[in-house]
Amino acid sequence: MTYCVGFWLEEGAVLLADTRTNAGVDNISVFSKLHALEIPGERVIALMTAGNLAVTQSVVTRVMEGVGAASDAPETTLATTPTMFDAARLVGEAVRDVYRTDGPALEAQNFKFEASIILMGQIAGRRMRMFHIYSAGNFIEATPDTPFFQIGENKYGKPILDRVAQHKTPLEDAVKLAFISMDSTIRSNLSVGMPLDLLVYKRDALKIGLQRRIEETDEYYRMIRTRWSDALRSAYRDLPAPAFWGAT
Amino acid sequence: MTYCVGFWLEEGAVLLADTRTNAGVDNISVFSKLHALEIPGERVIALMTAGNLAVTQSVVTRVMEGVGAASDAPETTLATTPTMFDAARLVGEAVRDVYRTDGPALEAQNFKFEASIILMGQIAGRRMRMFHIYSAGNFIEATPDTPFFQIGENKYGKPILDRVAQHKTPLEDAVKLAFISMDSTIRSNLSVGMPLDLLVYKRDALKIGLQRRIEETDEYYRMIRTRWSDALRSAYRDLPAPAFWGAT
Image (cartoon, rainbow over all chains, first blue to last red; front, side):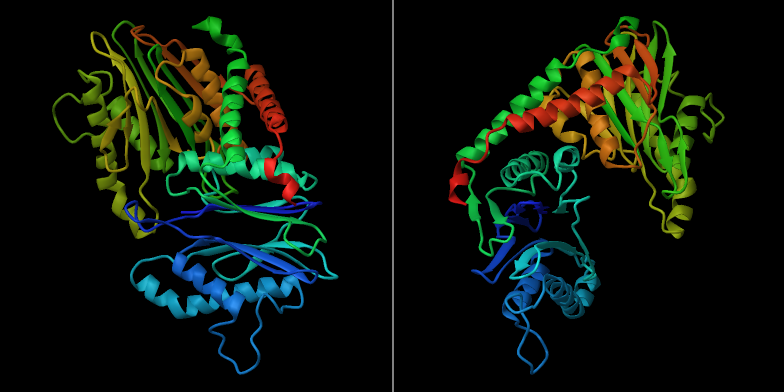
């Protein structure tokens, strides 16, 4: 399993991905699911992936390096797409291409073809956009009404986002939120695990603001983890007992 | 969908179930999923159900009224089983019986046979027990290490339980917890909805402590809902910003 969350905000974007992959509980590995491309001053594009690792790695290679395109023309990659909308179409087309190649063999062995991708980026002279691309290669775009996307094991970490996340949430608060949401997921699903990959992009910067691997020993993450747990426990303790309690 | 949570605690048990059923988003109804049997001084047995409504109603009728058993002997029901373990076996057998009757027809039309049941009760002279019964009629029992069971849409409401719920949690705190967990679920999944059915049983009482329908207008539930949201928001606000923030 996987958990990735991406925020599309007034100030910029925050992406956070776990790194655990598993083929059964007895076969667990660490793979980065966050891939970023930076041409300073010209473009920043990043994507996070969930689904079969063989499928998503193949998609990432296609869109980053252009390998696998069946054409004599110079291959389009995320480094050359003229717009973010074209970038989303390129990723969608890569997903469909992998499906054509690997889908039937996967399905013949009762594996589901799964790929879901969050794509965020900005190209000089254009606006920052974020897309959620599905297994069928189609996609939706984040808007101020729904300023975050989740892929993978999304449920445990969603309630806090539903309550707090807004388009105007500041970048640093979104980092906190991403950590809280990730921590809830890691606690409840063993197949989502540390370390984490974090990327922060400030709108119009056209360079990566921050890209960092968060290890289990990271002090800030540990602090969020402990203090959030403590805060939940104390909030729960402070709520009064049911008013109808006398009835028992 | 459905969300039910049951706590098996030192002091007793708390059961909370939503009442929404749906066959598609355009066909939503209210059905109780919590069924209780009380013979004061002799036994209290309650069950909560998730899955196909036709399946679970059929199971409940079989175990409550004995309808459908193919035997000349007086039918065993939850009112007559000598032990809670026998009660769990009776429910499991009823699930298998419905599977034999309805399973093939459901599967022929590509419906999955689904039934999952939380069974709690105590019979005079014996201890209070709680079981989680699966679609195959097999079951597990709550122990001090894992003092709660969830059925249906369990993920949204699980993080708070994982952090706080313990076997020694007082009954009234478990009611709070159940409401918080239910509220997180209702906010994130439209197919789980009000009103709620609550049952509280004090260990060794051999009568129902409290059984109550919680409507949307219930003041205590509304207070929990509002104050919990506020507490989460303020806990999140109080957490410091990332220490590595200067790096952007």
